[in-house]
Length: 441
Image (tube, rainbow, N blue to C red; front, side, top):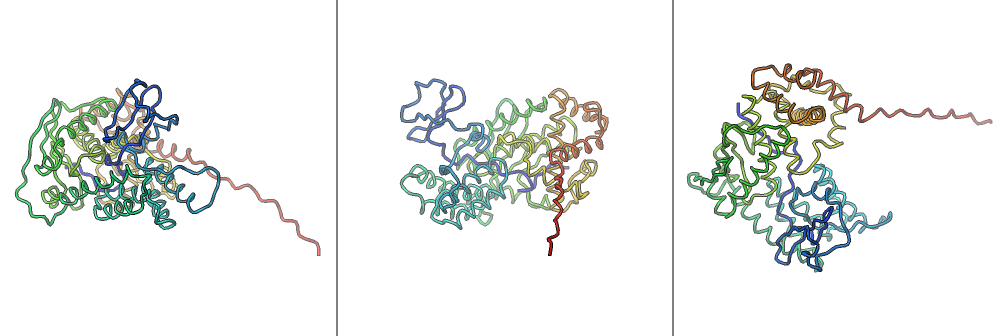
């Protein structure tokens, strides 16, 4: 059975590398990052190398920025007002700043609600349109993303000239994305272009290499990053160079729409196959982290099961690619509600696959997988996680392999994970109300 990934099932959106870096940021310690007038990003640990015009006495929370943008790029964020003003302007600024924080935590639905509220309150404010375009672009809604960028350009003033220039460039990139995703465009037979590195052998849809001249080197760099991250986390690597095939979105749909009963963005059948944006970005990078983890899991275990462990590891590694936490508090809170309602899906039920679940239960299954792997990660070191996978590959049952690593079988892990979720959200005990003394007549 090939490994697949449902579009938008659970993973928070990977924040793309199509935004421009903030004008000047000072990293922790003595490392500096800045952008020159040509838009080229520079890093240096020598403060004398930083142009005076690019210096800043204000050092932001760089860990937060990295979590937001995965070392990619930052968009325009209005300065959050001080005090508790309830003016329309200040409300919009707080909504946008909060939405950016929510995107960094993977709270996309909440961020979208805030951004749309900001637009309703003040349609003349440009920043919400920028982030709405970001999210729609990530979802493949290119017409809507274009509309939001047009709105940004029509509302952005001279103080955002740098971002206006960027928006115009992004509109051109969106046209490339739209064309390669357009299934109505007449295309000839799929042509693949090959490239290799020490650990990977890749093939690319020729349309991708034509649109993006550095596509191969960028994609191989993403794969090397994925290999390093999985090795650091689980301690395993494929025994042989791994094959990866990249398709334009429409070409992928044409090649594989008959294979699955639902829409996919990638799968593994001995090689990784992925549907790619026209211009490689953080979106593609996080997808490769996800699919590479599946490939390593199968390479070392000989199969896809237990599927909750397989998918949980892939989700964990993907979130690492975006510099996001393994799970969010709101995700764990949603699982707590399911536990209290006796709707928790036993991990043993999720071991063969996630098939046969309703959309709501499928989302819960992915979250359960994520928090279960997060719990296992907190109780083991890299060597124990490596041995867990290899013992499954050696023929031990999942229960035996888990017991060797944790002293618990599947049900034991199940109970421990639920208990940890419940302990994070203690019951709210209502204080007794004072008795109401009857009034005398």
